[in-house]
Structure formats: structure tokens, C-alpha cells
Length: 407
Image (tube, rainbow, N blue to C red):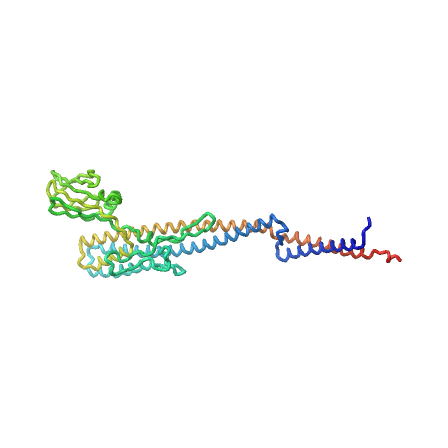
């Protein structure tokens, strides 16, 4: 077969161009460290690189979310830790105020500090985060969570936010609560439970007071019926033989029978009754609906009790007992929230570490696919250079072959 001069030139040039192209690719790989320059180099590998890059971008965003979440949780924990310290100090002062040797002047001094703790608690309930948002206002982060109205006839410290909570995704499958509403943390705190005389038939007088708070709290909690209010009314019926019988008005069931002496106090389930009457007389009392009161309101009530010089003896003791119950309930609510924050923080940290591990795995996998092996690439470049030089030399020699060289 005859080979024309043009064919010799074309083949030679193609060989040289192929060699130069190969060298150019290798030089580019060595310059940027990537062996995949285009999808055509390795279509399957390029697809895997795109998928791994997308997953790495997601992990980066999740880690940013996680960092923000943990920061928010730390802010809340700091506020609640301060609240716990304040309430602990207030409780200590309350117990001191029950000392029988304390004069009016001593109570006034305690009232001054209780007032400051009340104001501190109110400020903490309206705490803001680093972005200036109210932490416990729910979704209403631009306005205060709690409001103070000195002229209010009922509670003066009231929650004005909402019950919204924010959630943050920290992995494809894990979303954690990043904020809590003040409604849950501070407002939904039960005050001391109460009972009151509702009616009498025949009895000359009747009174009830709570003298054993723990016993009455258990009785109220176990027996209060939020659905059927009639079941919250009880009736004492004086019997012959120095006894008195307790009946649930709603159900008609006999609850108990205890010893009784007209005009003498007797205690039942933490309630002290004093009833004057004869056999057949009845006295009805009701378990009052549980009242919720935030800690600022409880502290304010006790502040007013301390500054009321007419409130002494048993009356002051009742105010003290109510304040202690309210503070204890408030501290339990704060402790519950702190435990929840701690649990969420532990999960967030565990997920963060897992994300970092996955990031390393994905980066390694991507690197194995797209990153150049420098030793292999340099060796290949040397081979390509030798082949190009051979092609160039051969082309030069072939193009010199002509009959005119032999004339």
C-alpha cells in the first residue's frame, strides 16, 4: 500500500498533538492537584464527587446550626443558673423570717433584700440572647416575655409572650428544641393549694387553715377533680359520740370518720378545722382550684407580707408557708428545664462529633476519587514527554525522506 506524503504529515502531526495534549492534562493535574478535570475523564467518579460534595456542604450547614444551638442552650442555662441562685437565697431569707425572735425591723431588712431578688428574677425572666431577642417570649422575641402592672388587681407579673418554641436541625434525622417558652419555665408553676369553707348548716362557727403543707398538697393533688367540680366539695357531719364524718358531696362516698370535740381544733390531711356545733350539724369545705403563679409574683407576695406590720403570728406563718411552696415549685420547674437543656446539649454534642467523623470519611472518599497521585502523575508525565520527543524526532526524520535527497 502506498502512503502519500500528506498521510505521513497527518500521522506525524496527530502523534505530536496527542502527546502534547496528554502532557498538558498531566501538567494541569499537577498544578491544581485534581485528576478529574472534566466529567469526561471519569463520568462515574465525577457523579460520586458531586454527591459527596453536596453531603459535605450539608454537614457544614448542620455543624453551623449545631454551634448556634449549643450557644443558645448555654445562654439559657446561664440565665436559669442565676435564677436558681436567686431563688435559693430568697428561700434562705424566708426561713430566717420565720424565726420567732425577729422584730418588725428585722423583717423590714429582709423585705429590702427580697424586693431586690424579686426584681432580679423579673429581669432574668425577660433575659435576652446575644442577638437581643427575648429568650423566653416564645415566637414574640422582639417584645418582653413578662409584663409588670403595679395597678393590677390580681397578679402584677404576667406572661405576655406565647408558647412557641424554636427547633433546629443538626443532622438529616435529628432536630432539637433550641428555645423554651416562659409559659412553661416560669408561668405554669403551682402556688400553694387552698381549701375553704363553702357552707354550714346548724354549726355555730367553722374555720379551716392549712397547717401541714406537704400532707395537704398530697391530698389535694390526689383528690382534686378538674372535670367534675362537685367532687371537690366535702361535707363534715357531726355524729353522736364525739365523732365527725367526712363525705364527698359529689360522689356521696364516705371518706373517713375521726374524733371530734366541738370548738376544739382537729387536723385532717394537713387541714386544721375548728367547728362549733352539735350532732347533725354539717360544714362543707371545697378544694380550691390550683392557682399558678410565677416566681416573681410569689416573691412580691412575700415582700408585701414582710412589709405589712399588721401581719403577725399565724397569719404571717401562713404567708410564709405559701411563699415557700411557691418558691420550691418554681425551683423545681427551673431544675426540670435545666435538665432538659443538659440533655439536649449532650445530644447536640454527640451529633456534632458524629458529623465531624462523617466529614472526614466523605472528604477521604472524595479525595480518593478526584485528587491526583503526584508520584504516579510525575512518572506518567515523564513517559509522555519521552513519547512526545520520540514522535517529534521520528516526524523530522520521516519528512526528510525524499527521492530528491538521492539525486
